[in-house]
Image 1: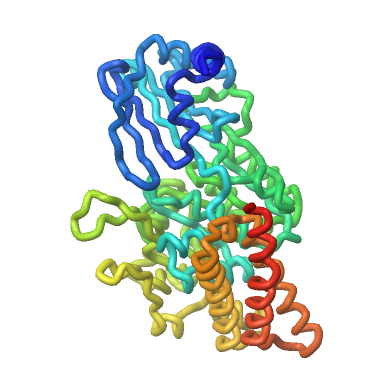
Image 2: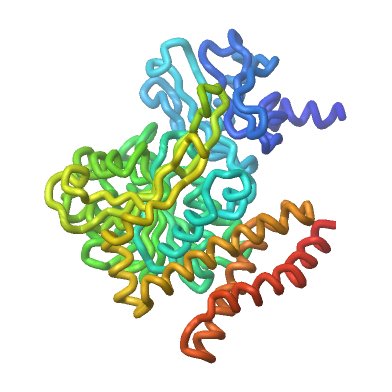
Length: 445
């Protein structure tokens, strides 16, 4: 016991290590002036909590010299921001100091979930509805371009990770991000073919930094051949490169990214008015998914929810809101705590018409596929509850389940030239119950 404590305070991160090892904590805040205030954190079960722990200035100084040495980056008056990923603890740190923070050094820690969220887990915690999950999977299968938007803490990066797991495993994926939040190593470990590009952070780094600018990384990614492209966070100049690629079809594949915003309209506003992407290029976006922390009936507790799935139509010129360019496919009803599908709007959808013409499937067949995706995910959640088996919803198992469903559909296509969705789903459910559940149970023991 004593040797562990000595190690923690000499080569480790001191008292922080205790907090960082509890993976139910999602964020830790240490405000300036250090030593005056108790450490504040956000816990996945208990929400916002004030601890009884004080971080001293000596501990802060020792911690700063450690992260300076590990990152190889300056952190001083000329460079008052340091953004860094703690590799051994799956944690991202943002540290600020004077003159930016006049009261002294302050820290914010974001702890990443050690395994990525899956759409089935999101259905289980009511973050997303089964139909929305089926719909988003269908858009990925149809190689639509998607942007996920939301404020900090809305879960957009976690949702992006879950959507990446829906990409077929025989695809090649290239990810580009400045802070490493996407679960690339984990995805590789369960059989995905992913190439990660690390780009320069837009804050706290100098131009002569040895990291690559995001727009240059993106040009490289497009030269790396036919791949699904995932942008960790669309922030600045790389937006123009991304849209040029999408427009001329160089991306030609699934393109997904996250961006700060609170609605489909705010995404358009940010991309066109702040990031200088022309309207004609912005139309290369097919779908915007909006996530938001919701407080029910004035409660202080926040629940994260997907609140909007919106299609970007192609026939408008100046302002998509005024000209009916933004078509809501799903919107959130706070009274019912439900993401509701707006069936009437389907008649106006350009995207469904396009997918129907490129796949040769009728709208009815497309919807059967979407519902099958939704039902497969509900079934996994119901089995997780029936067998009290949370591991069933982890990515390593949901990906196997997805693959099996795809294979059953392919078998039917080869044999009959079309898919009997009910029969395929029935066979798949039987396989999950008799094979996958037993496999997960034996591993859980």
